[in-house]
Length: 412
Image (cartoon, rainbow, N blue to C red; front, side, top):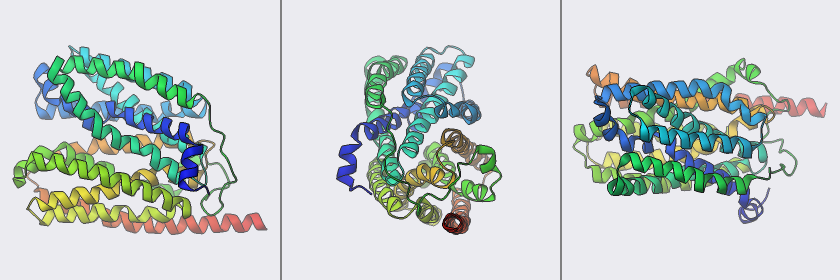
């Protein structure tokens, strides 16, 4: 296993390419698209519920599409798939800027979610999982830092551009950035595929065979694992989407929320890098049972503590969970099911993640309309995290037992 500095130097171009892919996926992420929520509602005369429903439908449609479209990374080079998806994301940005009808708006949102949140992320993490074995944890965690960079940089720049020239024109600028900056830089870095170096580590590669999607779907451990791994996408997106209601109900300041986002980003970066090193030294399966614990504790604190301290602690714990989750979610699938069909496998699990993130705001909104208190909802989220931790402990133990049996069979 290479030292961190040696690994960075010898793999800089591929790691930076993965970083840029996740960073520019920001143009299709909820935190960026939601910056234009007020303008869209005003332009189309939509209520919050109506626009939320449109957004959920577009996101769910992108998740369904991703389950089969994402498989192209198994058949075409990273450069070809990146070129296609980058250009299509730029087209979606232009459509969003020029939308004058609800149909065009829905199609634009569909394109932003499919090619931004879905495919750009999918290409980056699939490439890291395929190209690296013994250093996969570090590769995934470094590439995932692009999410944090996008969160820190793009909203500030977008708001500034909107102030100067308007929201529609700002989205045209985003399209220009995709074509003139993102595409050439990523293609330049990734025009040469990396050939995986070194032998696979039998302590972390849990599957000698290369599983197909259908085989994976028949594996009971997959379902035990995936339901729990999707929890953070559901919980964090739901809370972020309804942050206005949370702040109003608890009397917390919007300025405090902005500050905690900075804190969350810093903690998430640190947690991601540390967890990547841990995964390379042990395995993703070993770390997997732990990442729901801080999120569960954070939900309990939100449920029982009403002062602004609760928000600070929750965001800090969410940062830990998000950092670890990024490394685990990117590393576990090639570790367990192999890399031959990784594109198809990751397209499915990424679609499930997108689906989960789409449901979160809707379910929490319906609960609010029914009069279910936020504290009750946070307790339910904490209970899910507790049950999910138990499920992941069981699946982790089963994966390790399966690995030992495979190694024993090889020796025989």
